[in-house]
Image 1 (tube, rainbow over the protein chains, first blue to last red):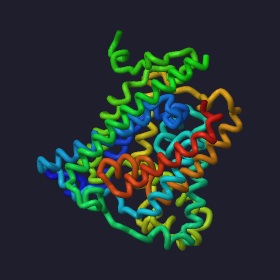
Image 2: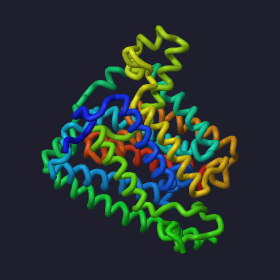
Image 3: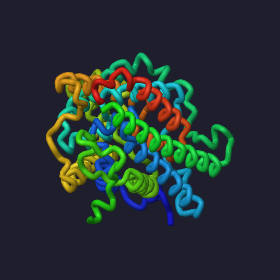
Image 4: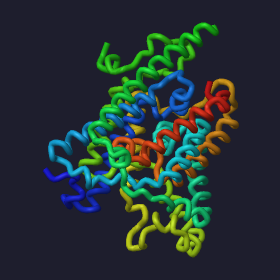
Length: 200
Length: 190
């Protein structure tokens, strides 16, 4: 098998757009199944009242991470041909911080706001308009912050390369952290539920 | 007891009249595996991951280019999304993926009976205020996603599962920002 298929030229750009549409359907379907169309549920994870979104997100990361590692181990996928974006440490971190603040204020992130729109959430219309506005503001000030944006480009670097640790070991650590996170999430939910019961 | 019940996640411990999960969502761990498989297939088929905010940037860039062509041409940020002009900027992988996302979300909601014109908010905030918060939050998200060159999908899911350094640094800061800010906007949600 020669994968990633697109990188080996198994189909052209036109076909890739059809694939994008089909993959998008699967993406949107599972997001909605997980409750990502509800701003209240998305926000609930930040108050430990319902950790569903957190559980879905990290189960997805672990599943895909293990799957792609295993396929690469079997020699079915060339992991070096998979593009995931260069690391620009400072912009990545500051951008993440701003996005996180926007997440709990607005109730969505870009993908989930799409699902919320599609399922009739009126607040998602305002969120999406805000999203366009924020991107426009960023575009307008981009010439001023170009230096910051393109500074310390570390290239396409992953955690194993950066810390000089075996890929499998990092993978194992992420699985352990995820399991710890799930346990914490379950515990937090129970704690908040009993707290609410006590208040009534 | 049908298959739907079997897949659902009941929250036996905290089911109450005002419980915020009215319908049976699937078990979050099962959904996570499903989502993870979609992402993995994207890697295998395309050699890239999922995204969302990139499609919004294309829309913004095209609008700016329509209104002020010279202005957009001179800006490298808009230029990246407009391309070299040989084909429509909308003939883009992420644009088609997000169109699919809208369809998939709608289908899932329709099957579960969750598609409803409603406003997502807690009981202690007015609808008008909620709309204002949604706009402000959306603006911060749009700005932050562009600075980080990706959002929860592109940097978080995709970067995270490829063990990207930037992806994990991004995810860490998303949670720092969101949990840090949560207390101050709690009246909106709980």
